Figure 1 (cartoon, rainbow, N blue to C red):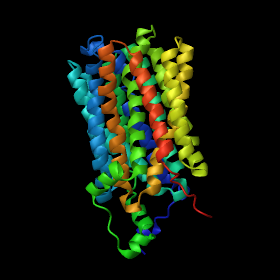
Figure 2 (figure 1 turned 120 degrees about the vertical axis):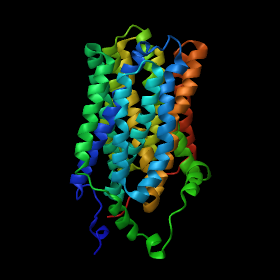
Figure 3 (figure 1 turned 90 degrees about the vertical axis):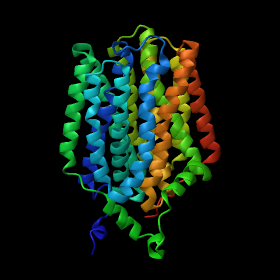
Figure 4 (figure 1 turned 90 degrees about the horizontal axis):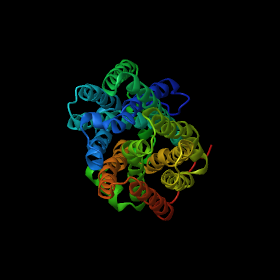
Length: 417
């Protein structure tokens, strides 16, 4: 029998490799999380002037453009050369990030650092979630994505809080340098024990009718057009991905400035955004598994509704405690929609095309960072206020949830025992 034939699917039977991928994505979350709070709230140290919101957002625009494009590349590339090699390339691309920030004479260096952050996140996070879906059984995909996103965003929240305290005590540059390089070193060391999951994919494909008929995978560009424009379900899910990243751009770039203008210090800002990310992460341990029981659509639509309401709440209240409450609701909303959009894409994707189809979805989703940075940065700069950008984001999230309600039929058919 071939090696692929021995690659049995299921989280339980693959718990060792599944756990290694889970720790990997925690490190991935630490890398992106270390920038949150610290860079926007202390951007004046890098020469960014007050009310230059579009220039401030440019570091997320560069990140989103690169990450979105390379998500697409990573999916197709991993189907050809394997998941582990792409994961390695992603970690190597992360090394310049803390070094560039440490020596940055101006904000342009931060923008350059976020180009490398886009490469790092596209290759590493895409590969961990794809690998965990490869290892899971078909009725565990929601759980697999939930665990992946949970640990990743727990990492985001933990890193945001740690670096907020570190930046307050030691300065942002030294904090990000030490924290970033130590995280990447640990991830590379752990990677030596990770197996490539492409053989699980081939074993799964061997059991499908397409394999028996000798059907070839759809060409990459054709897959892009189908997922992006032709298929109404894929199209609706992709726009949902774009909009939820516009909302996350608001949290990453503008909310730290919004809270600062309302008199909050760096540590309190870190608690608000860290709570949002941590609840988002922890809740996905439940919401991904929930979707394996009741389907994807109800959690996704409920998540968009909660996120829209919480964003409206952020703009409406005026106290630290109220903002903490709104952040918690935002985290729950994100937890309901975020992993289950990916799970819905996975439900419909043929096994040998899963990497590229998820890559197309993640291309559109993370391009939402660039769209959000430009649109929200322009709105804030033209109005010289942050509240209009918050209200616009709430409206976009509500409209996106309505689109999914009307356009998407349930994608998940639970396998019979």
